Image (cartoon, rainbow, N blue to C red; front, top):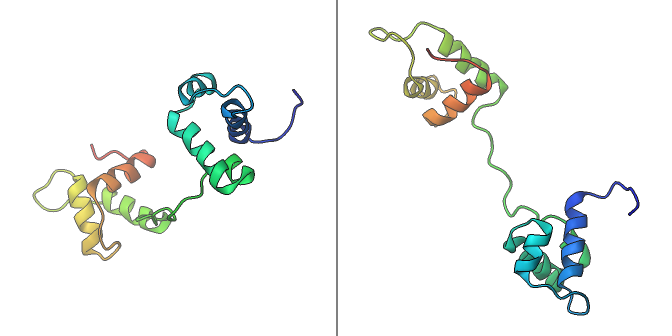
Length: 131
């Protein structure tokens, strides 16, 4: 096999199509999944895209129907969250909780809504601990 710069998924999709070809080995979906180490849905979807839209579409990855969700916290909002987390906690509290930080971000109109888990992931990403 020649060395090249073709993406691995394109090669895998081409091999799947060759394997399930009726004029070729005509492998079942189950056999193809074991040989190529992929899910049965991958074999079915590649074959279906080939039949309905042609070889070029079948060799490519499926395009997203919707764009990815917009991030709640960008770099500026992340800096504001860190500043709040590093500040003194509210009176009567020894430390900030994730829920309190989320509520403070909403109170200060930094974000419209945010979950405590988004706050947790952001703090974890920056290696900031509330303890």
